[in-house]
Amino acid sequence: MSTKNKVRVRFAPSPTGGLHLGGVRTVLFNYLFAKNQGGEFVLRIEDTDQTRYVPGAEEYIMSCLAWCGLIPDESPANGGPYAPYRQSERKDRYRAFAEQLVVNGYAYYAFDTPEELEAQRQLIPNFKYSHENRLQLRNSLSLDESEVKKLLAIGVPHVIRIKMPVGETIGFQDMIRGTVSFDTSLVDDKVLLKADGMPTYHLAVVVDDYQMKITHAFRGEEWLPSAPVHLLLWEYLGWKDSMPQWAHFPLILKPDGNGKLSKRDGDRLGFPVYAMNWTDPKTGDLTKGFRELGFLPEAFINMLALLGWNDGTDQEIFTLDELIAKFSIDRISKAGAKFDFEKAKWFNHEWIKRSQNEKLLPMVKAVLKEHGVIDPVDNYLERVLALVKDRLTFIEDFWIQASFFFTPPTDYDLEAIQKKWSNEKTAFFNDIIPKLSSFEHWETEALEQYYKEAILSSGLKLGELMLPLRIMLVGGKFGPHVFDIATLLGREETVKRVKKGLAAILT
Image (tube, rainbow, N blue to C red; front, side, top):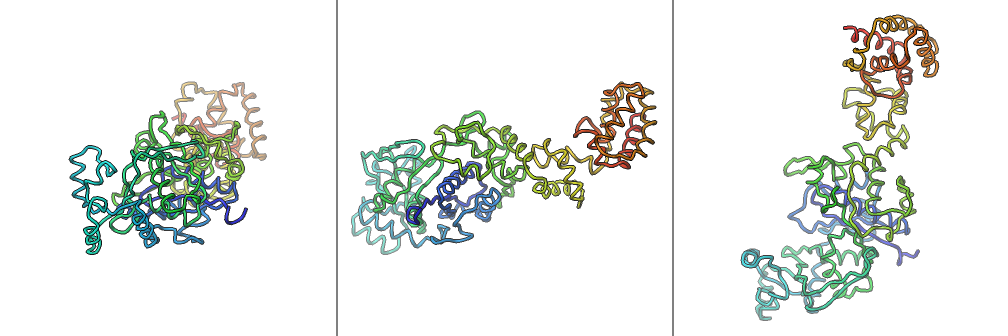
C-alpha cells in the first residue's frame, strides 16, 4: 500500500474528564480497522474549548490507551509527521480557513454579545442562530459593509459562523448505515471560530483531518447531527475529494436498552463505565474504573469488541491479534448494544483462567500487599494461583479464594458440622493427628488415599469427615480440592490447623 493510499484513522477526544467505555470502543474499532488494513492510528487531542479543559485529563487518556494496549502510531506523546497533535498548538492554522469561507460567501462575522444571545434565548424557546433570524441579528450579513469593517478594525469581539444554505439536501455514504441525508434548512449556523481565536470542533476537525490525511473518520452516532456542517465545510474549503469515509458507531445502551449508558447509570447500578479510575481535580470525586475493579485489559478489550460487532461465528474469546485479523466494518451492527455487566465479568473470568500465572503474579502480589502479606515466595504463590484462578472473576477475588494459604483461619463455619458431630469423629481426629505428623508421602494423591483409608478403617462415612477437614484448614465450605490445600500448606501447618480446628469444634 502506497503512502498516498495508506489507511489513516484518528481518535480525537477532548481532555475534559474520564474516558467512558464508549470512547474506548471507538478507539478500539479505529485501531482494529487501521491495523487490519496495514494503516496508521492517530491520537489527536481536541482541546479547543479551554473553558472545559481539565488538567491531567490528556495524560489520563493516554494512560488508558496504554493499559488497553491500543498504542497510537502518532500522538502528542510520540509526535509524528503531522505534528502538533494538540489543537491548541495548531491555533494559528484555523483563522485563515475561516476567513477564506467568509470571503467566498460561505460564512460570516457575528458580533452578537453573549448577553444579546442570552436575551434571545429568554425570548424564544429553543432559539437557534439560523437562516430564519440571522438578518435580524448583529452580523456581517445584516450590517452595512462599512460598519463591519469598522467593527473589525477596532477589534470588536466576534465569531465566524457558517452560512447554512436553505432548502438543500446533502448526504454521504456511511460505511455502517448506508445513505444518510439532511435538509440544510433544519441546521443552524454553527460557530466555526470563537472570539478567542480558537476554532470550534466543526472547523478544527475538518482542517485537521485534511492536513493529517485522515482517510476514515469513525465516531459515535451522536455526532450524526454535526455531519451536514462538516460535509459543507469539506466542499466549501475545496477539499471534497479528500473527505474521509465516515462510519457512525451504534451507541452503548443501558442494560435495559433504554438510552445511552452514562456514568450516572454505572453509579446507580454498581458498575464502572470508565476504563480507569478518574479523580475530578476540582471536586476530588473518584469515579472507579474497570482496571481498578480487577479487569484484565485483554478481557476489557474483548468485551468491548463484541458490543456491536461480531465475526459471524459463535466465537466469543478473541486476542487482540485475532480481532485485528477478523475485524471488518460491515460486521458492525446499526442497532445499539446493551451493556451487560454480568457478561463483562464472564469475559474477565475467562481471561484470568487463560492467563499465564507469571503474568498474574504482580497483580496478585498487589492484592496480598493490601492485606498485609508482603513478599510472598513466587513459587508458592504460583502454586496457589494455579489452584484458585479458575474461581476468580476479578483479581481482587484472590484474597477471598486464597487468603487461608497465607493466614490461618480465625473463624470457622461450625454450624455446618457441629449438629452432626459425635464422639467417634473426635476419636478419629485424635487418632489421625499424630499419624499425619509422621506421614512421609506428603502429596495430593497419597494423602487423599491415606485419609480415606483411615476413614474406612474407623467405620465412619467418607462424607462425614471430608467437610470437617476442609473447615479446619480454610474456615469454611469453599476452596479448591482439600488435599491440594493440605499438600500446599505442608505437613506441619496442616497438623497445626487440624488441632486448632478440632479444639474450636469441641469448645
